[in-house]
Length: 135
Image (cartoon, rainbow, N blue to C red; front, side, top):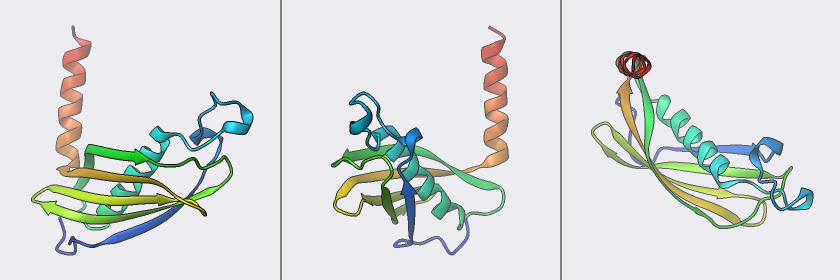
């Protein structure tokens, strides 16, 4: 990790709620931002912020998510995702996030990521895959 990683760093992203990000079980007029896609969008925003402060051989993986999905954002609208680094404990980095549309706070999330050596992780995955496929 670079010495630029510190508490309070922030990132802001805007996401358009497109057809791939909505629920469809309420019919065409009830298509709204789906919780799993909110989690994904927030997780990637946290990943991008953290990546700016990692060494070339490092990346991070998500290890914990706590979410409150507080409101519905309709298809075609934008949400703003604000993420902030709220904790650093060795290789674990914690984030506080807020998701807002033009009217409401629609989500809050706490997310934790663990900084890893990318090549070592790929080697572990390949070894596990070989073991599982040999059964």
